[in-house]
Length: 411
Image (cartoon, rainbow, N blue to C red):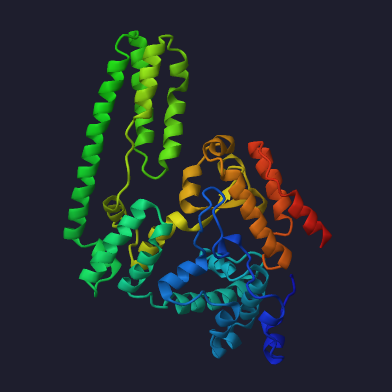
């Protein structure tokens, strides 16, 4: 709906924005609650859900944002006031965040210097007003997280347990005070280092067994294996991707080498050792130390760090690094963990490893389609057919949503 509302008419006629379009309007699929990841199929956390977790209240509505502006500021900056309202109606409250992040000295696109000055006066007030909302006490936030920890990766769940115990032991401390406590950090860092040491020992034992297996091969092949091992061990030590993906990537490293071994017995023994390669695992102690090194550490940023793995994120199907656009037609929605795991791995390879990928993507597109049909997901009118085409172009796989597209066409 692209109607330019006049703020004065809106107020004088007592028209509410809610009466004009259905409840639950979304301008970004990342904001839809309980949307499932296109890769793993797990529920993701929306911006509003995270806000409730941190502040105990939902994100402010357009009406609440506009009503918070003082009367004297409205009179001082009438253009800025009307501009902010009109843009929120067209693009949602997220648009305000985009304006917040603009350089203070830049002129807002399409506006004169005078107009930009008024807009920034309104933005300055809104930023200080809403950012001053106090975050919930640490023990209350962590108690809420403790009830939801099954949604998080194992190591993050362990970290939540650690924080839960500390907030019970130190009820008056903030999360920042807990994580920056030198004694607590030293304790968890020591545990982390011991875990890393144990892993290095197991890797060394594994390396010895591998070379024992191929000791009768020519020297040049042994030298080649050393180089391959170096690459494979880096993958094995990568703690932020799944075991399943690491196993496949490690096998891929040795694929050509194994093809050229003529001795079947040696080949079989080496394959066995490759499959037995130990993988490093993150732990709650590792996450504790990582969280303690967050830049600009505060309770808000710590909670954002904890939520990173399950946050709803936009995943570029056609890689951005290879010219893929930011348009919605080039994106599906993945939890932060799966999005990070995808990195620049080609879709065909990823779909081979995770066979539920297509099914989960199909379910997500259909789910978004229900919002599109109801008119409650703005700016996504042609999304289903466009993303279907993009996925087919990039992966060669077809997301079968013809039935949905036919039903949509009838409307």
